[in-house]
Image 1 (tube, rainbow, N blue to C red):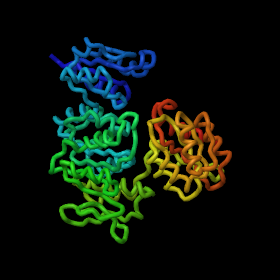
Image 2: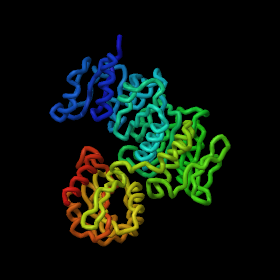
Image 3: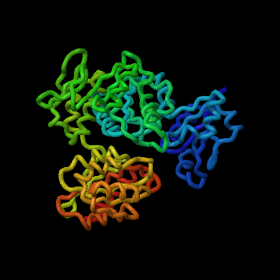
Image 4: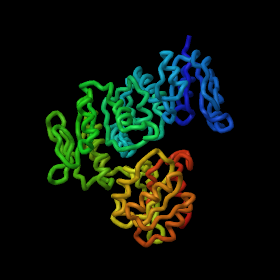
Length: 454
């Protein structure tokens, strides 16, 4: 008798899990808290799939919970929901789509390179993915970057590589997941409305290496005290990267700013930091992490250097949009927490008009504006956090602050007050929820508004 599986949440990963499981012949219970009327596109995509049962606009009842064998949850679904707790009390597994993908990948001997951290995940994942492709490997760049891992597993050939970006939400419900090489880039306060404490947040992130073995490698940021300390509890061999020190057996800068990586006791010169295609200290760290991942995955240093000197910026991450009347517009919609926006404002030497605000994740913006006051001349704030950000920016000493009702109004206001050579930077320091479906939609709208001003 085939299993019946409950799939909770019909965002990208949940929808992909339903399709995969249905194709494999499982009975699937499709669940989302949204009512049927709000799920038109999802339901259209599932019309041709068999063995589906729908529970929409409500949580599954006890009869369904008794009937299913396990649940696969989307990242946005809190694991503390009553019905998920009840499932666990029945001895039934509640796993993420990433865990499902990992388990299904084992029969094909698919390899995983895992990337997590608070900031830099998407850039590092994209760089590592390009390096693997350049090395001639069948490569899929998946996970929190927008492509469900389970969809790649379904089409990948044996021996393929999945380079996977992992959020804390995705890592909360992994159990067997074991990447060949992993990295934790950094950890700063984020998603406190979900995790409540930094300890809980760090614990979720640490799941990336929890099942690795001593013959595997975990690449950790030596300059971040939290990630450095993670090496003490890491079952895999920790390899540290640093901009500021020279960790033994790690990745670091020599006196000429060459990036040196130590492997098998040998110092290997990879590339000079000045030759990296991506600017900024944060991108230097991202490149060091990608070097650690790929070098310890067995990829030649010349392949790594070729990609690091030619790689183009990721969409929505410090993405140049256009210059209008001498004013540069930059899309950093991927900046969804204060630390990410700190790194963004520190990337420019000319005055910044910052557009910030969005969904309130319980973040503290004090450190952001204590630093941003040296870079930002004007703050334009929008969304749920507008009042909090405006108050914090004012206390930090930013004199020009405007509260606007929409992103369009903020861009128009920026165009009116900007001087030639200013940078108008969308780096919200907040999630997009409540105003947009995701940060990509927010970034695309910003670009459309800017380009329509020409």
